[in-house]
Length: 139
Image (cartoon, rainbow, N blue to C red; front, side):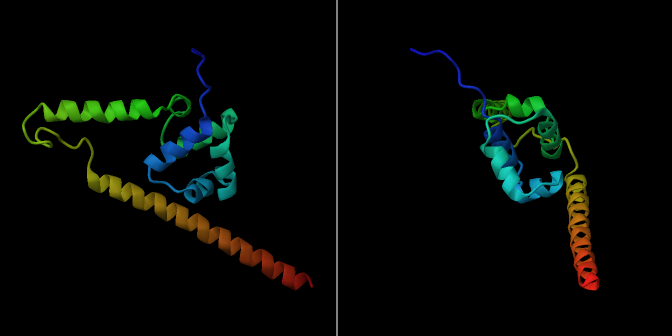
C-alpha cells in the first residue's frame, strides 16, 4: 500500500474557494488585472508563484496558507461541527444562533466593492475609446 500523499493542487484549491465565495473567474481576473483565460490556467496549475498566490488570496479574503492547506474535508467538518453545536442549544435549528455581523453592513460593503469594480471597467472602456480615437487621428 502506497502511503505517499499527493501534493496539494493549488489551482484546484483556488477554484473551490472562489466558487465557495460565489465569485466567477472573470471577476477574479478583473480584480487582479489579468484575463479570464489566465485565471483558468492558474486554476489548472498544481503550483503558483508566491506573489500571485498572495494577490489571489487577498481578493478571495483568505490567507495564502488557507489556499495551500485547503481541503474539502475540513470544510465539511467545519459545517458539520457548526450544525452539531448549534442544534444542541435547543430543538429548533436556529435557536440560540445570533449573527455576529450586521447584514446591512455586508450589503453596503458588497455594493461599494461592486461600484469600484464597475468604475474600473468604465475607465478601461474609456481608455480603449481614447486609444482608438488617437489611432484614427494618426491616420
